[in-house]
Image (cartoon, rainbow over all chains, first blue to last red; front, top):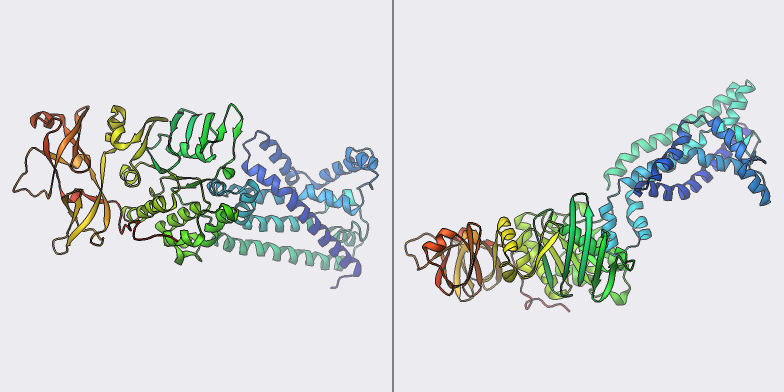
Length: 226
Length: 368
Protein backbone atom coordinates (compact mmCIF):
# COMPACT_ATOMS: atom_id res chain seq x y z
CA UNK A 1 0.00 0.00 0.00
CA UNK A 2 1.70 3.18 -1.12
CA UNK A 3 0.72 6.67 -2.28
CA UNK A 4 1.45 7.73 -5.86
CA UNK A 5 2.81 11.23 -6.67
CA UNK A 6 -0.72 12.13 -7.83
CA UNK A 7 -2.08 11.03 -4.45
CA UNK A 8 0.53 13.14 -2.63
CA UNK A 9 -0.35 16.09 -4.84
CA UNK A 10 -4.04 15.64 -3.99
CA UNK A 11 -3.28 15.47 -0.26
CA UNK A 12 -1.13 18.60 -0.36
CA UNK A 13 -3.80 20.43 -2.35
CA UNK A 14 -6.40 19.36 0.20
CA UNK A 15 -4.30 20.62 3.10
CA UNK A 16 -3.69 23.91 1.27
CA UNK A 17 -7.40 24.36 0.63
CA UNK A 18 -8.33 23.53 4.23
CA UNK A 19 -5.68 25.92 5.60
CA UNK A 20 -6.71 28.83 3.38
CA UNK A 21 -10.40 28.29 4.10
CA UNK A 22 -9.81 28.01 7.86
CA UNK A 23 -7.80 31.23 8.04
CA UNK A 24 -10.29 33.22 5.96
CA UNK A 25 -13.25 31.81 7.88
CA UNK A 26 -11.62 32.64 11.20
CA UNK A 27 -11.46 36.29 10.12
CA UNK A 28 -15.00 36.35 8.69
CA UNK A 29 -16.85 34.15 11.18
CA UNK A 30 -15.43 35.66 14.39
CA UNK A 31 -17.21 39.03 14.04
CA UNK A 32 -20.32 37.25 12.72
CA UNK A 33 -20.37 34.84 15.69
CA UNK A 34 -19.79 37.74 18.11
CA UNK A 35 -22.69 39.62 16.59
CA UNK A 36 -24.95 36.55 16.77
CA UNK A 37 -23.94 35.94 20.40
CA UNK A 38 -24.63 39.51 21.55
CA UNK A 39 -27.39 40.89 19.34
CA UNK A 40 -30.99 41.29 20.35
CA UNK A 41 -31.90 42.22 16.77
CA UNK A 42 -34.80 40.47 15.03
CA UNK A 43 -32.49 39.69 12.11
CA UNK A 44 -30.63 37.18 14.25
CA UNK A 45 -33.02 34.34 13.39
CA UNK A 46 -32.70 34.87 9.65
CA UNK A 47 -28.90 35.11 9.78
CA UNK A 48 -28.66 32.00 11.99
CA UNK A 49 -30.82 30.05 9.55
CA UNK A 50 -28.71 31.10 6.55
CA UNK A 51 -25.51 30.19 8.41
CA UNK A 52 -26.93 26.75 9.26
CA UNK A 53 -28.16 25.96 5.70
CA UNK A 54 -24.97 24.15 4.59
CA UNK A 55 -25.53 21.72 7.48
CA UNK A 56 -28.73 20.37 5.97
CA UNK A 57 -28.49 20.95 2.20
CA UNK A 58 -26.99 18.22 0.01
CA UNK A 59 -23.53 19.49 -1.05
CA UNK A 60 -24.58 19.02 -4.69
CA UNK A 61 -27.38 21.58 -4.22
CA UNK A 62 -24.90 24.08 -2.81
CA UNK A 63 -22.46 23.32 -5.61
CA UNK A 64 -25.16 23.75 -8.22
CA UNK A 65 -26.12 27.20 -6.99
CA UNK A 66 -22.47 28.23 -6.69
CA UNK A 67 -21.98 27.18 -10.27
CA UNK A 68 -24.96 29.26 -11.39
CA UNK A 69 -23.91 32.31 -9.36
CA UNK A 70 -20.27 32.16 -10.38
CA UNK A 71 -20.92 31.28 -14.00
CA UNK A 72 -20.72 33.92 -16.78
CA UNK A 73 -24.48 34.68 -16.50
CA UNK A 74 -24.59 34.54 -12.70
CA UNK A 75 -24.49 37.71 -10.52
CA UNK A 76 -21.03 36.98 -9.11
CA UNK A 77 -19.66 35.71 -12.40
CA UNK A 78 -20.80 38.74 -14.43
CA UNK A 79 -19.52 41.13 -11.75
CA UNK A 80 -16.12 39.46 -11.82
CA UNK A 81 -16.11 39.57 -15.59
CA UNK A 82 -16.78 43.33 -15.54
CA UNK A 83 -13.93 43.78 -13.05
CA UNK A 84 -11.71 41.89 -15.46
CA UNK A 85 -11.13 39.03 -13.00
CA UNK A 86 -10.87 35.39 -13.86
CA UNK A 87 -14.10 33.40 -13.57
CA UNK A 88 -14.22 31.27 -10.42
CA UNK A 89 -15.57 27.90 -11.52
CA UNK A 90 -12.94 25.23 -12.03
CA UNK A 91 -10.26 27.29 -10.23
CA UNK A 92 -8.68 26.98 -6.79
CA UNK A 93 -10.20 30.38 -5.92
CA UNK A 94 -13.67 29.09 -6.73
CA UNK A 95 -13.05 26.09 -4.51
CA UNK A 96 -12.00 28.39 -1.65
CA UNK A 97 -15.12 30.56 -1.98
CA UNK A 98 -17.43 27.55 -2.12
CA UNK A 99 -15.70 25.87 0.81
CA UNK A 100 -16.02 29.02 2.91
CA UNK A 101 -19.80 28.91 2.55
CA UNK A 102 -19.89 25.15 2.96
CA UNK A 103 -17.87 25.18 6.20
CA UNK A 104 -19.31 28.41 7.61
CA UNK A 105 -21.52 26.82 10.30
CA UNK A 106 -18.62 24.72 11.56
CA UNK A 107 -16.70 27.90 12.37
CA UNK A 108 -19.61 30.11 13.45
CA UNK A 109 -21.48 27.78 15.77
CA UNK A 110 -18.70 26.73 18.19
CA UNK A 111 -17.53 30.37 18.34
CA UNK A 112 -21.07 31.62 18.95
CA UNK A 113 -21.54 29.09 21.77
CA UNK A 114 -18.26 30.13 23.35
CA UNK A 115 -19.05 33.85 23.05
CA UNK A 116 -22.51 33.34 24.54
CA UNK A 117 -20.88 31.73 27.57
CA UNK A 118 -18.70 34.81 28.21
CA UNK A 119 -20.14 36.60 31.24
CA UNK A 120 -21.43 40.00 30.14
CA UNK A 121 -20.70 41.26 33.65
CA UNK A 122 -16.98 40.78 33.04
CA UNK A 123 -17.22 42.90 29.89
CA UNK A 124 -19.08 45.58 31.87
CA UNK A 125 -16.38 45.51 34.53
CA UNK A 126 -13.73 45.93 31.83
CA UNK A 127 -15.64 48.91 30.42
CA UNK A 128 -15.60 50.65 33.82
CA UNK A 129 -11.83 50.13 33.81
CA UNK A 130 -11.54 52.10 30.58
CA UNK A 131 -11.47 49.29 28.00
CA UNK A 132 -13.05 50.04 24.61
CA UNK A 133 -15.37 47.50 22.98
CA UNK A 134 -12.52 46.23 20.80
CA UNK A 135 -10.11 45.96 23.73
CA UNK A 136 -12.75 44.15 25.80
CA UNK A 137 -13.23 41.67 22.97
CA UNK A 138 -9.56 40.83 22.55
CA UNK A 139 -8.58 40.82 26.24
CA UNK A 140 -11.67 39.22 27.82
CA UNK A 141 -13.91 37.49 25.26
CA UNK A 142 -11.20 35.86 23.13
CA UNK A 143 -9.10 34.40 25.98
CA UNK A 144 -12.23 33.09 27.70
CA UNK A 145 -13.34 31.47 24.41
CA UNK A 146 -10.07 29.63 23.74
CA UNK A 147 -11.72 26.21 23.80
CA UNK A 148 -14.39 27.43 21.37
CA UNK A 149 -11.73 28.75 18.97
CA UNK A 150 -9.85 25.46 19.09
CA UNK A 151 -12.98 23.46 18.33
CA UNK A 152 -14.09 25.82 15.56
CA UNK A 153 -10.70 25.80 13.84
CA UNK A 154 -10.29 22.05 13.96
CA UNK A 155 -13.86 21.27 12.87
CA UNK A 156 -13.62 23.72 9.98
CA UNK A 157 -10.30 22.29 8.88
CA UNK A 158 -11.45 18.68 9.03
CA UNK A 159 -14.81 19.41 7.45
CA UNK A 160 -13.17 21.21 4.54
CA UNK A 161 -10.87 18.25 4.02
CA UNK A 162 -13.89 15.97 3.89
CA UNK A 163 -15.94 17.87 1.33
CA UNK A 164 -16.68 16.19 -1.97
CA UNK A 165 -19.97 17.16 -3.60
CA UNK A 166 -19.36 20.89 -3.67
CA UNK A 167 -15.83 20.39 -4.99
CA UNK A 168 -16.96 18.15 -7.76
CA UNK A 169 -19.66 20.60 -8.85
CA UNK A 170 -17.66 23.82 -8.68
CA UNK A 171 -14.06 22.69 -9.00
CA UNK A 172 -14.24 19.84 -11.39
CA UNK A 173 -11.30 17.49 -11.36
CA UNK A 174 -8.14 19.30 -12.47
CA UNK A 175 -4.90 17.76 -11.09
CA UNK A 176 -2.98 20.20 -8.86
CA UNK A 177 -5.71 22.83 -9.12
CA UNK A 178 -8.97 21.37 -7.89
CA UNK A 179 -8.38 17.65 -7.53
CA UNK A 180 -8.43 17.24 -3.75
CA UNK A 181 -8.09 13.95 -1.88
CA UNK A 182 -11.80 13.11 -1.78
CA UNK A 183 -12.07 13.52 -5.57
CA UNK A 184 -8.87 11.53 -6.08
CA UNK A 185 -10.36 8.64 -4.09
CA UNK A 186 -13.47 8.82 -6.27
CA UNK A 187 -11.28 8.66 -9.38
CA UNK A 188 -9.41 5.62 -8.04
CA UNK A 189 -12.67 3.83 -7.37
CA UNK A 190 -14.03 4.72 -10.80
CA UNK A 191 -10.86 3.27 -12.32
CA UNK A 192 -11.19 0.19 -10.13
CA UNK A 193 -7.83 1.02 -8.44
CA UNK A 194 -9.06 -0.26 -5.08
CA UNK A 195 -5.62 -0.51 -3.47
CA UNK A 196 -4.91 3.14 -4.30
CA UNK A 197 -8.34 4.20 -3.06
CA UNK A 198 -7.75 2.16 0.06
CA UNK A 199 -4.41 3.82 0.83
CA UNK A 200 -5.70 7.35 0.43
CA UNK A 201 -8.90 6.58 2.34
CA UNK A 202 -6.93 5.11 5.21
CA UNK A 203 -4.80 8.27 5.41
CA UNK A 204 -7.95 10.42 5.57
CA UNK A 205 -9.59 8.15 8.12
CA UNK A 206 -6.62 8.07 10.46
CA UNK A 207 -6.01 11.80 10.11
CA UNK A 208 -9.64 12.68 10.85
CA UNK A 209 -9.79 10.31 13.80
CA UNK A 210 -6.59 11.68 15.36
CA UNK A 211 -7.85 15.25 15.00
CA UNK A 212 -11.23 14.46 16.54
CA UNK A 213 -9.55 12.49 19.31
CA UNK A 214 -7.46 15.57 20.01
CA UNK A 215 -10.61 17.73 20.34
CA UNK A 216 -12.55 15.35 22.53
CA UNK A 217 -9.72 14.48 24.89
CA UNK A 218 -8.13 17.91 25.19
CA UNK A 219 -11.22 20.09 25.39
CA UNK A 220 -12.40 19.17 28.88
CA UNK A 221 -8.92 19.89 30.22
CA UNK A 222 -9.02 23.31 28.59
CA UNK A 223 -12.37 24.05 30.13
CA UNK A 224 -11.38 23.16 33.66
CA UNK A 225 -8.28 25.35 33.43
CA UNK A 226 -10.40 28.49 33.62
CA UNK B 1 -22.58 65.65 40.63
CA UNK B 2 -26.06 66.22 39.42
CA UNK B 3 -28.40 63.66 37.92
CA UNK B 4 -31.93 63.13 36.86
CA UNK B 5 -32.73 59.67 35.53
CA UNK B 6 -35.93 58.20 34.17
CA UNK B 7 -36.04 54.51 33.43
CA UNK B 8 -39.02 52.25 32.82
CA UNK B 9 -38.78 48.49 32.65
CA UNK B 10 -41.89 46.34 32.82
CA UNK B 11 -43.56 47.21 36.12
CA UNK B 12 -40.58 49.11 37.52
CA UNK B 13 -40.49 52.88 37.22
CA UNK B 14 -37.36 54.71 38.21
CA UNK B 15 -37.34 58.48 38.56
CA UNK B 16 -34.38 59.75 40.55
CA UNK B 17 -33.01 63.22 40.89
CA UNK B 18 -30.35 64.64 43.19
CA UNK B 19 -27.40 66.97 43.42
CA UNK B 20 -24.56 65.74 45.58
CA UNK B 21 -21.04 67.08 46.24
CA UNK B 22 -18.21 65.85 43.96
CA UNK B 23 -16.14 64.77 46.97
CA UNK B 24 -16.41 62.52 49.99
CA UNK B 25 -18.61 59.46 50.32
CA UNK B 26 -22.33 59.35 49.59
CA UNK B 27 -24.22 56.38 50.96
CA UNK B 28 -27.15 54.96 49.03
CA UNK B 29 -29.51 53.06 51.21
CA UNK B 30 -32.74 51.26 50.54
CA UNK B 31 -34.43 47.87 50.44
CA UNK B 32 -33.72 45.41 47.63
CA UNK B 33 -35.58 46.30 44.46
CA UNK B 34 -35.43 50.04 45.25
CA UNK B 35 -33.27 50.67 42.16
CA UNK B 36 -29.90 51.13 43.88
CA UNK B 37 -27.90 49.00 41.47
CA UNK B 38 -29.70 50.41 38.44
CA UNK B 39 -28.85 53.93 39.60
CA UNK B 40 -25.15 53.02 39.79
CA UNK B 41 -25.26 51.26 36.42
CA UNK B 42 -26.74 54.41 34.86
CA UNK B 43 -24.02 56.57 36.42
CA UNK B 44 -21.33 54.19 35.12
CA UNK B 45 -22.87 54.15 31.64
CA UNK B 46 -23.67 50.42 31.71
CA UNK B 47 -27.41 51.05 31.52
CA UNK B 48 -28.81 53.81 29.33
CA UNK B 49 -31.71 55.65 30.99
CA UNK B 50 -34.81 56.34 28.91
CA UNK B 51 -34.41 60.05 29.64
CA UNK B 52 -32.59 62.51 31.87
CA UNK B 53 -29.21 64.12 32.41
CA UNK B 54 -26.04 63.34 34.33
CA UNK B 55 -23.28 65.83 35.07
CA UNK B 56 -20.07 65.01 36.94
CA UNK B 57 -17.54 67.69 37.94
CA UNK B 58 -19.28 70.04 35.52
CA UNK B 59 -18.93 67.70 32.53
CA UNK B 60 -22.08 66.35 30.92
CA UNK B 61 -21.90 62.57 30.59
CA UNK B 62 -25.50 61.94 29.60
CA UNK B 63 -28.21 64.15 28.20
CA UNK B 64 -31.04 62.50 26.34
CA UNK B 65 -32.32 65.71 24.77
CA UNK B 66 -28.88 66.83 23.56
CA UNK B 67 -28.07 63.30 22.43
CA UNK B 68 -25.02 63.00 24.72
CA UNK B 69 -24.16 59.56 26.07
CA UNK B 70 -20.47 59.15 26.89
CA UNK B 71 -19.69 55.40 26.76
CA UNK B 72 -18.74 53.68 30.02
CA UNK B 73 -15.09 53.24 29.06
CA UNK B 74 -14.65 57.00 28.56
CA UNK B 75 -16.39 58.12 31.76
CA UNK B 76 -13.53 57.38 34.20
CA UNK B 77 -16.08 56.13 36.67
CA UNK B 78 -14.84 53.06 38.49
CA UNK B 79 -17.08 50.37 39.84
CA UNK B 80 -16.75 47.64 42.41
CA UNK B 81 -19.39 44.93 42.30
CA UNK B 82 -20.85 42.55 44.84
CA UNK B 83 -19.56 39.62 42.76
CA UNK B 84 -15.93 40.77 42.42
CA UNK B 85 -15.95 40.24 38.59
CA UNK B 86 -12.23 39.58 38.52
CA UNK B 87 -11.04 38.30 35.15
CA UNK B 88 -10.57 34.56 35.74
CA UNK B 89 -7.90 34.03 33.09
CA UNK B 90 -5.61 36.72 34.49
CA UNK B 91 -3.41 36.72 37.59
CA UNK B 92 -4.10 39.16 40.39
CA UNK B 93 -1.28 41.34 39.09
CA UNK B 94 -2.74 41.41 35.56
CA UNK B 95 -6.20 42.13 36.95
CA UNK B 96 -4.79 45.07 38.89
CA UNK B 97 -2.92 46.26 35.82
CA UNK B 98 -5.93 46.02 33.51
CA UNK B 99 -7.24 49.55 33.92
CA UNK B 100 -3.91 50.93 35.16
CA UNK B 101 -2.11 50.10 31.89
CA UNK B 102 -4.91 51.62 29.81
CA UNK B 103 -4.29 54.95 31.49
CA UNK B 104 -1.65 57.40 30.29
CA UNK B 105 1.15 57.68 32.89
CA UNK B 106 0.44 61.34 33.65
CA UNK B 107 -3.19 60.52 34.42
CA UNK B 108 -2.38 57.89 37.06
CA UNK B 109 -3.12 59.35 40.45
CA UNK B 110 -2.16 56.27 42.47
CA UNK B 111 0.92 54.11 42.13
CA UNK B 112 0.70 50.34 41.72
CA UNK B 113 2.74 49.63 44.85
CA UNK B 114 0.84 52.25 46.79
CA UNK B 115 -2.48 50.48 46.18
CA UNK B 116 -1.00 47.03 46.75
CA UNK B 117 0.33 48.17 50.12
CA UNK B 118 -2.84 50.01 51.05
CA UNK B 119 -4.92 46.86 50.48
CA UNK B 120 -2.23 44.43 51.71
CA UNK B 121 -2.46 42.22 48.62
CA UNK B 122 1.27 41.96 47.85
CA UNK B 123 1.36 38.19 48.53
CA UNK B 124 -1.47 37.50 46.09
CA UNK B 125 -0.01 39.01 42.92
CA UNK B 126 0.97 35.72 41.23
CA UNK B 127 -2.30 33.93 42.02
CA UNK B 128 -5.41 33.49 39.90
CA UNK B 129 -8.76 34.77 41.22
CA UNK B 130 -10.05 31.20 41.74
CA UNK B 131 -7.36 30.64 44.37
CA UNK B 132 -8.40 33.63 46.47
CA UNK B 133 -10.77 33.79 49.43
CA UNK B 134 -13.88 35.98 49.25
CA UNK B 135 -12.29 38.80 51.21
CA UNK B 136 -9.12 38.71 49.13
CA UNK B 137 -11.13 38.83 45.91
CA UNK B 138 -12.96 41.94 47.05
CA UNK B 139 -9.70 43.64 48.05
CA UNK B 140 -8.22 42.89 44.63
CA UNK B 141 -11.41 44.11 42.93
CA UNK B 142 -11.19 47.32 44.94
CA UNK B 143 -7.53 47.73 44.02
CA UNK B 144 -8.25 47.13 40.34
CA UNK B 145 -10.95 49.81 40.34
CA UNK B 146 -8.71 52.28 42.21
CA UNK B 147 -5.75 51.78 39.89
CA UNK B 148 -7.84 53.03 36.96
CA UNK B 149 -7.76 56.37 38.85
CA UNK B 150 -11.53 56.92 38.65
CA UNK B 151 -12.85 60.41 39.27
CA UNK B 152 -15.76 58.67 40.98
CA UNK B 153 -15.84 55.20 42.50
CA UNK B 154 -19.16 53.36 42.62
CA UNK B 155 -19.44 50.54 45.13
CA UNK B 156 -22.42 48.25 44.57
CA UNK B 157 -22.92 46.30 47.81
CA UNK B 158 -19.25 45.30 47.81
CA UNK B 159 -19.55 43.46 51.13
CA UNK B 160 -22.93 41.78 50.69
CA UNK B 161 -21.41 38.47 49.63
CA UNK B 162 -19.07 38.33 52.62
CA UNK B 163 -19.73 37.00 56.11
CA UNK B 164 -19.68 39.30 59.14
CA UNK B 165 -16.09 38.51 60.02
CA UNK B 166 -14.82 39.40 56.52
CA UNK B 167 -16.95 42.54 56.41
CA UNK B 168 -15.22 43.74 59.55
CA UNK B 169 -11.87 43.14 57.92
CA UNK B 170 -12.68 44.97 54.69
CA UNK B 171 -14.52 48.02 55.99
CA UNK B 172 -11.37 49.62 57.44
CA UNK B 173 -9.76 49.33 53.99
CA UNK B 174 -12.63 51.27 52.49
CA UNK B 175 -12.14 53.96 55.10
CA UNK B 176 -8.43 54.10 54.34
CA UNK B 177 -9.25 54.49 50.66
CA UNK B 178 -11.59 57.32 51.50
CA UNK B 179 -9.09 59.05 53.79
CA UNK B 180 -5.91 58.50 51.81
CA UNK B 181 -6.86 58.58 48.13
CA UNK B 182 -9.53 61.29 48.26
CA UNK B 183 -11.47 59.34 45.65
CA UNK B 184 -15.13 60.39 45.73
CA UNK B 185 -17.35 57.39 46.30
CA UNK B 186 -20.96 56.37 46.06
CA UNK B 187 -21.53 53.44 48.38
CA UNK B 188 -24.65 51.33 47.94
CA UNK B 189 -25.75 49.04 50.72
CA UNK B 190 -28.81 47.72 52.47
CA UNK B 191 -26.79 47.64 55.70
CA UNK B 192 -27.09 51.06 57.32
CA UNK B 193 -24.21 50.43 59.73
CA UNK B 194 -21.77 49.90 56.83
CA UNK B 195 -22.76 53.22 55.34
CA UNK B 196 -22.69 55.16 58.62
CA UNK B 197 -19.24 53.76 59.32
CA UNK B 198 -18.00 55.44 56.14
CA UNK B 199 -20.14 58.54 55.94
CA UNK B 200 -23.07 60.33 57.56
CA UNK B 201 -24.23 61.45 54.10
CA UNK B 202 -26.95 59.27 52.75
CA UNK B 203 -29.57 59.07 50.03
CA UNK B 204 -32.62 57.02 50.96
CA UNK B 205 -34.18 55.08 48.06
CA UNK B 206 -37.50 53.32 47.85
CA UNK B 207 -39.39 51.90 44.86
CA UNK B 208 -37.39 53.80 42.23
CA UNK B 209 -37.51 57.15 44.03
CA UNK B 210 -35.08 59.09 46.18
CA UNK B 211 -36.93 59.88 49.41
CA UNK B 212 -34.31 62.17 50.89
CA UNK B 213 -30.64 63.15 50.64
CA UNK B 214 -28.58 64.53 53.52
CA UNK B 215 -27.00 63.67 56.86
CA UNK B 216 -28.56 60.53 58.28
CA UNK B 217 -29.36 62.25 61.59
CA UNK B 218 -31.29 64.90 59.65
CA UNK B 219 -33.08 62.85 57.01
CA UNK B 220 -34.19 60.29 59.58
CA UNK B 221 -36.68 62.88 60.84
CA UNK B 222 -38.49 62.72 57.52
CA UNK B 223 -41.47 60.48 58.21
CA UNK B 224 -41.18 58.39 55.05
CA UNK B 225 -37.45 57.89 55.63
CA UNK B 226 -38.05 56.93 59.21
CA UNK B 227 -40.76 54.45 58.27
CA UNK B 228 -38.39 52.91 55.74
CA UNK B 229 -35.42 52.90 58.10
CA UNK B 230 -37.53 51.37 60.82
CA UNK B 231 -38.73 48.57 58.59
CA UNK B 232 -35.08 47.77 57.84
CA UNK B 233 -33.91 48.45 61.41
CA UNK B 234 -32.39 51.71 62.66
CA UNK B 235 -28.77 51.28 63.66
CA UNK B 236 -26.51 53.55 65.67
CA UNK B 237 -22.86 53.58 64.68
CA UNK B 238 -20.45 54.74 67.39
CA UNK B 239 -16.74 55.38 66.98
CA UNK B 240 -15.18 54.14 70.21
CA UNK B 241 -11.67 54.01 71.66
CA UNK B 242 -10.60 50.77 73.35
CA UNK B 243 -9.79 51.43 77.01
CA UNK B 244 -9.36 48.01 78.59
CA UNK B 245 -9.80 44.30 78.01
CA UNK B 246 -10.88 41.84 80.66
CA UNK B 247 -9.72 38.49 79.37
CA UNK B 248 -11.14 36.14 82.04
CA UNK B 249 -14.62 37.68 82.10
CA UNK B 250 -14.61 38.22 78.34
CA UNK B 251 -15.44 41.88 77.93
CA UNK B 252 -13.91 45.06 76.60
CA UNK B 253 -14.39 48.60 77.87
CA UNK B 254 -14.33 51.48 75.41
CA UNK B 255 -15.06 55.18 75.55
CA UNK B 256 -17.71 57.05 73.62
CA UNK B 257 -17.20 60.75 74.15
CA UNK B 258 -16.71 60.97 77.91
CA UNK B 259 -18.74 57.88 78.73
CA UNK B 260 -17.73 54.26 78.94
CA UNK B 261 -19.38 51.28 77.34
CA UNK B 262 -18.98 47.59 78.03
CA UNK B 263 -19.12 45.10 75.19
CA UNK B 264 -18.03 41.54 74.42
CA UNK B 265 -14.27 41.11 73.94
CA UNK B 266 -13.02 42.76 70.77
CA UNK B 267 -9.72 41.77 69.26
CA UNK B 268 -8.22 45.24 69.00
CA UNK B 269 -5.23 46.90 70.69
CA UNK B 270 -5.68 49.31 73.59
CA UNK B 271 -6.12 52.88 72.44
CA UNK B 272 -7.25 51.88 68.94
CA UNK B 273 -10.49 53.12 67.38
CA UNK B 274 -13.22 50.58 66.73
CA UNK B 275 -16.64 51.31 65.26
CA UNK B 276 -19.56 49.48 66.78
CA UNK B 277 -23.23 49.35 65.98
CA UNK B 278 -26.23 49.18 68.31
CA UNK B 279 -29.73 48.68 66.95
CA UNK B 280 -32.10 51.43 68.10
CA UNK B 281 -34.59 48.72 69.08
CA UNK B 282 -32.01 47.20 71.45
CA UNK B 283 -31.75 50.32 73.62
CA UNK B 284 -34.15 51.01 76.48
CA UNK B 285 -34.75 54.30 78.29
CA UNK B 286 -34.86 54.95 81.99
CA UNK B 287 -35.47 58.19 83.87
CA UNK B 288 -32.89 57.28 86.53
CA UNK B 289 -29.80 55.13 87.02
CA UNK B 290 -30.85 51.59 87.91
CA UNK B 291 -28.87 49.52 90.41
CA UNK B 292 -28.92 45.77 90.69
CA UNK B 293 -29.45 45.08 87.01
CA UNK B 294 -27.49 42.82 84.67
CA UNK B 295 -27.58 45.33 81.81
CA UNK B 296 -24.03 46.66 81.59
CA UNK B 297 -24.48 49.99 79.86
CA UNK B 298 -26.38 52.97 81.15
CA UNK B 299 -25.39 56.04 79.14
CA UNK B 300 -26.58 59.37 80.50
CA UNK B 301 -27.90 61.94 78.06
CA UNK B 302 -30.59 64.48 77.23
CA UNK B 303 -33.51 63.96 74.88
CA UNK B 304 -32.91 65.99 71.71
CA UNK B 305 -35.85 64.88 69.55
CA UNK B 306 -38.97 62.74 69.72
CA UNK B 307 -40.71 61.36 66.68
CA UNK B 308 -43.73 59.08 66.57
CA UNK B 309 -44.03 56.65 63.68
CA UNK B 310 -47.06 54.40 63.91
CA UNK B 311 -46.98 52.50 67.19
CA UNK B 312 -43.29 53.19 67.78
CA UNK B 313 -41.37 56.29 68.77
CA UNK B 314 -37.83 57.21 67.81
CA UNK B 315 -36.14 59.22 70.56
CA UNK B 316 -32.78 60.87 69.90
CA UNK B 317 -30.61 61.18 72.99
CA UNK B 318 -27.45 63.27 73.16
CA UNK B 319 -24.98 61.14 75.13
CA UNK B 320 -21.97 63.05 73.78
CA UNK B 321 -22.93 61.69 70.37
CA UNK B 322 -26.47 61.27 69.13
CA UNK B 323 -28.01 57.94 69.95
CA UNK B 324 -31.33 56.82 68.43
CA UNK B 325 -33.58 54.81 70.69
CA UNK B 326 -36.74 53.03 69.63
CA UNK B 327 -39.46 52.71 72.27
CA UNK B 328 -43.19 52.06 72.26
CA UNK B 329 -45.60 54.99 72.36
CA UNK B 330 -46.85 53.68 75.68
CA UNK B 331 -43.37 53.91 77.21
CA UNK B 332 -43.18 57.49 75.99
CA UNK B 333 -46.34 58.34 77.94
CA UNK B 334 -45.50 56.24 81.02
CA UNK B 335 -42.08 57.82 81.43
CA UNK B 336 -43.35 61.30 80.45
CA UNK B 337 -40.41 61.69 78.12
CA UNK B 338 -39.98 65.25 76.89
CA UNK B 339 -37.39 67.30 75.04
CA UNK B 340 -34.40 68.31 77.17
CA UNK B 341 -35.12 65.64 79.74
CA UNK B 342 -32.27 63.76 81.41
CA UNK B 343 -32.46 60.01 80.62
CA UNK B 344 -30.33 56.88 80.69
CA UNK B 345 -29.91 54.68 77.63
CA UNK B 346 -29.76 51.05 78.68
CA UNK B 347 -28.21 48.43 76.47
CA UNK B 348 -26.81 44.97 77.06
CA UNK B 349 -23.16 44.39 76.25
CA UNK B 350 -24.23 41.62 73.84
CA UNK B 351 -26.25 44.11 71.79
CA UNK B 352 -23.10 45.97 70.79
CA UNK B 353 -21.54 44.64 67.58
CA UNK B 354 -18.17 45.68 66.24
CA UNK B 355 -18.34 46.80 62.59
CA UNK B 356 -14.65 46.95 61.87
CA UNK B 357 -11.61 45.16 63.22
CA UNK B 358 -7.96 46.17 63.45
CA UNK B 359 -8.73 49.65 62.33
CA UNK B 360 -5.61 51.62 61.58
CA UNK B 361 -6.00 55.29 62.18
CA UNK B 362 -4.88 57.50 59.33
CA UNK B 363 -2.28 59.22 61.49
CA UNK B 364 -0.37 55.98 62.04
CA UNK B 365 0.04 55.13 58.39
CA UNK B 366 0.96 57.79 55.92
CA UNK B 367 1.68 57.12 52.31
CA UNK B 368 4.64 58.45 50.33
